[in-house]
Amino acid sequence: MDNAIREFEDYMNGEHTLREKIEHIIFMEKEAYRELPPGLMKELILDDRELAQYIENLYQEIAIPVMIRILEEGKASGEISPNVAVEHVLAFIQLYMNQYETILEMAQHSGDLNGFLEGMVHLFFYGICGKP
Image (cartoon, rainbow, N blue to C red; front, side, top):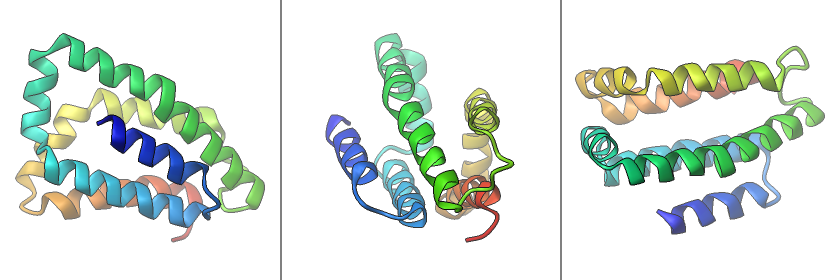
């Protein structure tokens, strides 16, 4: 997991466009779900408080700061609407996190786990960008 985090940070710190960063996030999400199916992830998090805390720390210490930076860069480059505040996006992410289990269940029942998850990530990112 730590290697994936380092790879994510390295890529996000590289000279990539917002679109390339979004595509990389979509790719990493799909790979993560392929390697660790949502049902198993749910069980592990519920059964292992230490793992759940570790994931929460990664989210707070790495994912959120990187997301804020990407949003600010996207706004500065005109790739994200100036009408979208960082707080709006963070609120949306919190809503997503609060419904994580429900979303995973919906993804599993969709019949196309990868397509469902890719669609959710696509909807989130391109919804704030306004265009693919």
